[in-house]
Length: 143
Image (cartoon, rainbow, N blue to C red; front, side):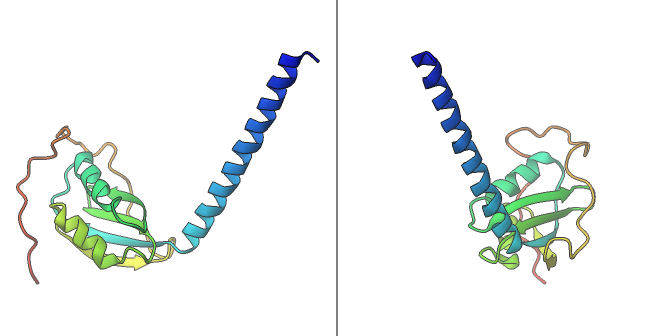
């Protein structure tokens, strides 16, 4: 083999080994993370579009223990996947602080509760844009 060819084969083999190692580590860390995961479903007021959800998700991503989020805009439900590092009541407080009053409806291991159906796609969003919906932020109701 020519020197350039051997060098190319060596680089290719190293790349494949590195990619497989990264995939193995990522798959195992997801498994550990998912075994400790909880899902908290919140009833959230004033949700109207994907921009609202992006605002909420951006706020929740600031916290350790946040794993993911899905929503049903029509029913005003947001389900947050998280670890015990991010307790349900703290999630509700963070969503409320972002301008969307929220209360915890349920917290369970994934698959134990019925998740909200649907998602934010095709929700009839009027295209609020990057500045949000323009809804005024009011403090949550006490009670």
